[in-house]
Amino acid sequence: MDLCNINQIKGLLSRHGFRFSKSMGQNFLIDPTVPRHIAAVSGAGPGYGVLEIGPGIGPLTEQLAQLADQVTAVELDQNLLPILQETMADYPNVSIVPGDILKLNLPQLVTDTFHGLTPIVCANLPYNITTPVLTVLLESGQFASITVMIQREVAKRICANPRTPDYGAFSLYCQYHAACELLFEVPPQAFLPAPKVTSAVIRLTPTTEPPVPVVDKQLFFRIVKASFAMRRKTLANGLASGFNGQLTKAEVTSLLQSCGFPPNIRGEQLSLSDFAQLTQAFNSALS
Image (tube, rainbow, N blue to C red; front, side):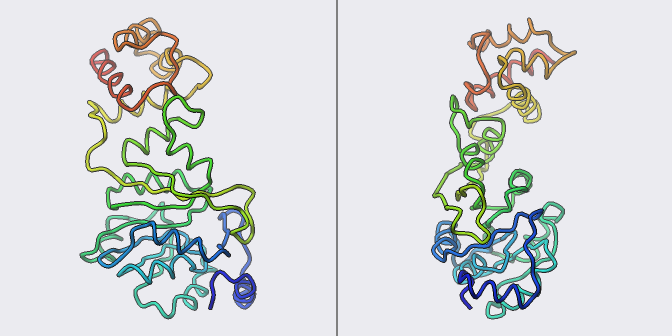
């Protein structure tokens, strides 16, 4: 079966009585070049185990199974399970795990399914769970790389540089944990049904150590969050609000100046290393 042939897809779905779920953000690929390209750039190959999230009817799963030693696909929609049993019947190295990726024990899943293999992630993520999924994947510390197709606007935010409109707290979060690359874009017409936005494929390569030394990770991300909570306000105002009761605005302004930052600077102007420096100053002031 051609899992990207629109007529065959419609016949398959009709046979199983399947209906698309908007709440689950289901869009199935109908351009066969896309899953091949995603699988190729993921680095999947001999010696690798691939975790896929939301396989749908399996076009990307199929491509990954032809490259990697093991593919474990987590699917939340119970209605897709019998379809996947049919479409993946010829691939003994594919395991379908029913469940919610946000509730699974990822270290245990990796241990149970990728015996001695290098674990990576490759998936076409539902748009509505992109941020929490990437967060749990990065926090798990289990994967050598994470290659996902997501909404283009989110991809641009993740990979954004300082002093650009897309740069924000999630940019810093991802770039603290991984090297981030925007690989290529995918147009809406590559999907059934066609989404209203363009997609993009990104690769996150987690680092064993953060790119900059941070004296207190929790404090670092508290500062980052406060810095972007009110984007139209200066960094001093945002931090004074975020640390209300601990530091006055005058004290925050003094800390900024001690780091060499002007009092009217905004959060989007600071790099990872700038925020690390600011964290050091706040840590000393709060001790």
